[in-house]
Length: 138
Image (cartoon, rainbow, N blue to C red):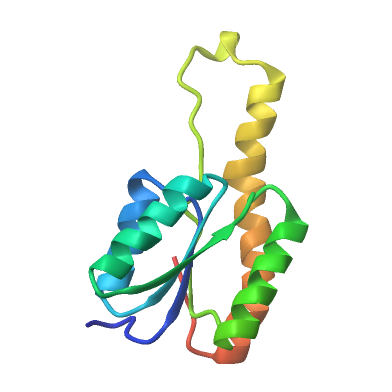
């Protein structure tokens, strides 16, 4: 157990890759982890792995580009856990092609996830963090 012992941590993009690693490490350090992602199967697999290792976690479906979904997830977490202490705005995408080959739609999607998603998440979670006065933002 470590410095996030008994804290409630919400991680976006927690189903795979770096997000999954964030979730696993936070759980190993004592946090109850809210694994959020659009990929329900992999998100639940992340939760199952954490639970199998003695940690605490649950899955919440979240499209970070939708402000209303942020509000809904935050409301659910606060209603069931009373607080959110840690937010890891991890969800993101990368376009791997030449700029001149990138479509406007691809650029807009990247901006929506990587920038607006962080804005929506911070905006939705900050009141709960201020209320708990225990929050950490990464």
